[in-house]
Amino acid sequence: MQDDAVFKISYGLFFLGSEFEGNKNICVVNTVAQITQEPLKISVTVLKTNLTAELIFKSKKFSVGVMDHSANLDDIAHFGQQSGKNVDKLIDMDCSLDVLNNPVFKNGCNASLTGAVTDVVDLGTHYLFIADLKDAAILSDKPSLTYADYRAMRSGTFNKSDADSKTNDTWQCSVCHYVYDGETPFEDLPDDYICPVCKKPKSVFKKV
Ligand code: FE
Image 1 (cartoon, rainbow, N blue to C red):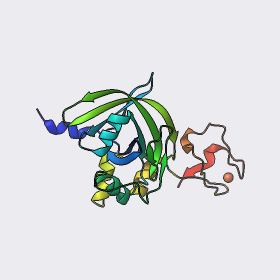
Image 2 (image 1 turned 45 degrees about the horizontal axis):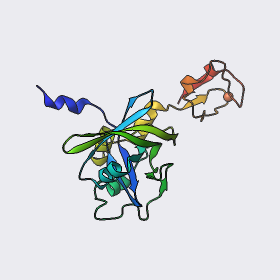
Image 3 (image 1 turned 90 degrees about the vertical axis):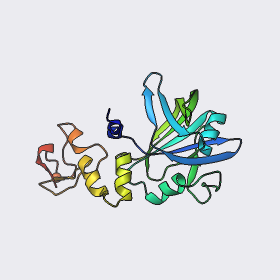
Image 4 (image 1 turned 90 degrees about the horizontal axis):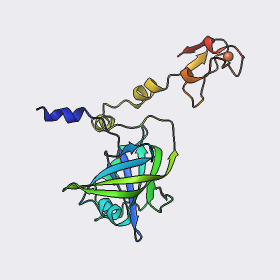
């Protein structure tokens, strides 16, 4: 059996927050997933020794910031590479509170989620928390950061502009040179879209 095959599974990177009796913490995990659609449930697996795992176990709630391509390594190191048991990681960081009073870190994130825990599975070293989605917001249209992107960032080989341009080509009107800057990908615009400046049809736009 090739155990390394599991490394082919892709993961995102997330800021995971919780609060219990005024104690707040945020850590970094790569294990958030949507697990059912109806009802809308998410799960997260956290090392039991993490302060955040203790807080979620007691409070039965957590927040998630879904990192995108604008996430920065300093923030990931701040929340991911030191323990809330030794330092208050929230001091001087731009955190807000979600609907369940969990701290959320939204910088470099394209979405925020709030979960209310319905089930806890003891995995020995980790807890698997299963939660109902209680709140959710889209914060940007930037692509989500994968764990592979993060490793590339750490080794200096992640090119944000290359990664972003794959999903966000620039389209320009060949008549008046207007550059489309809407949130909807240009390819997804209706066929009757016209240039807002010169009123020529969608077909005159070219990828630049
Ligand atoms: Fe035009």
